Image 1 (cartoon, rainbow, N blue to C red):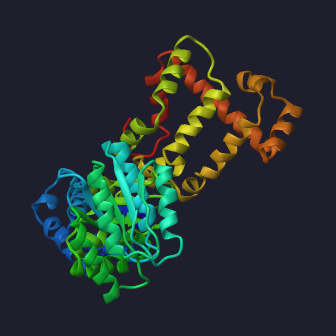
Image 2 (cartoon, rainbow, N blue to C red):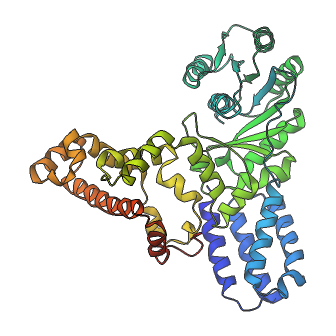
Image 3 (cartoon, rainbow, N blue to C red):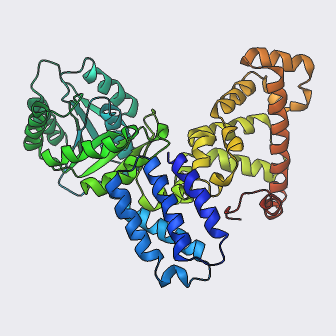
Length: 452
């Protein structure tokens, strides 16, 4: 997400940092570039105009012109205004109300409501330790109810049964009674979508809203629709008191215009981003962290939080003890490391959050391919236990057998073994207390902005 915007702003900012001083002329040129970058990202024109005026008002003042590092001062202003545009801070769900807290999911058909319902249920269970009931009021779309039932089982949430011949309001009311009687913390109600906004749809969702009185009414919208996402959200908000937005399919949106437009157009915060198809691919929306990503400065906080949740601490401690005792890092250990990286969103997901990555050449970024990691895992899984413990025995015939068993080429096996050898050397340095030396050696190879 934001890749195009990040690239364009990155070039503009790089040029700025080369300026000893800034004048009104080069600030004007820079703001023209920023304006074009935002428009190309499909940010709504009124939002772009207001944003540029706010940046200009601060940029032509003493704050920048008399700064010792004017380029950095202007970057800070752009960052601050991006954060302000998207909402200052993360707006959390209101879970302090009398349980069951009702969350109503609204949106057009195909926006990802049902999947987002399951993702939110999982997020509430895992992060907030809440008991969750999900119910489908979509009696129109074939298999919508069965889809939610399947996803509920996957995320271990309770499912309230319903059928296509029932009244949607009756389903929602019965689900609320069930949640109350069974002392559940949260009820998430998935409503029907339409191909476009119509009076019948709005009337139905208003009746459901009046019947269950939700604490949170979340509008689920596809980020890839760009400006239309913000306009549709506004239309829904005029008919329904929305409390926030869930922006879906952001992993496929290289522009990011919806994220920058929605808050300004609707006045409602983005609360969550859908970042993939899996049920754990939902993250709270933090405007400051997203602004940092847009400006190519990474998102280390989210990376650390993700590592704390997803890294297997038992395996990590076991490996640390093993290395400390002087034992060799083997292919089983390498396999575990690769699996944990895939669990954190793969190389693509990690790179998106690392500072300075946007400054890497496009060719280098394009070489980062999670499919290669899948191939590496397949290669290791095709080895015998002895080969994983003693990689030195993997010679010609063994390499051919492993390649055939994993559906890869001998060259791929050779490449993996070479990468493993490099990793093994690095782990050996770490086990000897050489972490600082290793980082010092890496520093010269890292793009400007890495925090070492």
